[in-house]
Amino acid sequence: MALHCDPVLSGWPVIQRPGRCTGHDIASCSPRVAPTRTRRLLTCARAAQQEGGGPMDAIKRVARQIQGALPVVGLLSRLSSPSGGIGNDIMAYPEFSRQLLYDSHLPEFVEATAEWERAYGKVGQRRLVLLYLYFASTAGGVVSGKLIMASARRVRVTQDIEIEIDRIDNARDQIYEKYKMTEKPKGKLQDKIDIAVDSIVQLTLGLKEGEEIPPAAAFMLVPVIAGAFSTVPDIKDLVKKSIESRGDRKDAYKV
Image 1: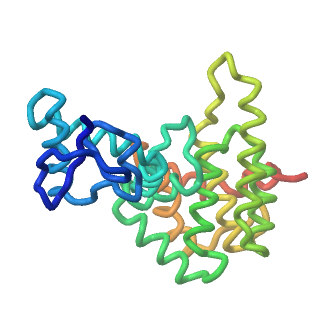
Image 2: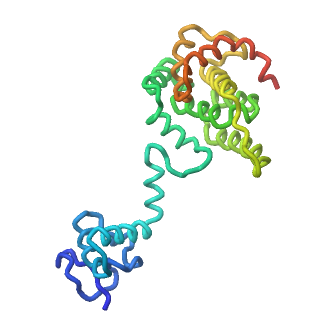
Image 3: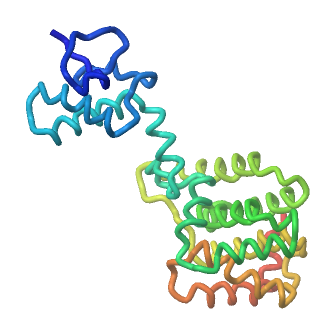
């Protein structure tokens, strides 16, 4: 005889009725009727315990059934967590941004990006800065710097990030397609830092390639860039070096 869990009867087994949650029938635990409170979960566990095992075994069994019945909810839950959760080789832009804002090892990073936005307004928006930190981290040293700089010039005008994500991600993925059977190129750290500096300067300040960054902007830019590479020892010194040597890269992005 099939059993179902009746919260009114506090878990006493009764004859199963359609649409009710049973302790052992996954199909009956639909999203519409899946228990949402601890008391109901425990009630279902009592019925599940009829299959054998201790109380904790019953609870685990019901929890697994509920999780299996709600795959989309589980996926959305993982995506909405601070660190994302898809387990890919390369994080997507939203995951990268969340991780940077929640987990950067540079405590002043969040305030630094906020200060940058206050100073430069629309072209200094945090979401745009994060976009070029994302490109630098995931495509720098792999994708041509010319493509990323051209993207920064466009976004300075349009603020349209979706099409640029498609462009740069596709360019990177096409390169990676050639390395299916071997290790993918990762790009040199200094190349990533350089393209982060140059693209954000292009995006926000609109300076020509190689043009000197004003001292106040250079000072503010250091923690913004360093936050994306915060696990690297002496990262601020490497960022300062990149800012100071920007003039040496004036011909690097010519089309």
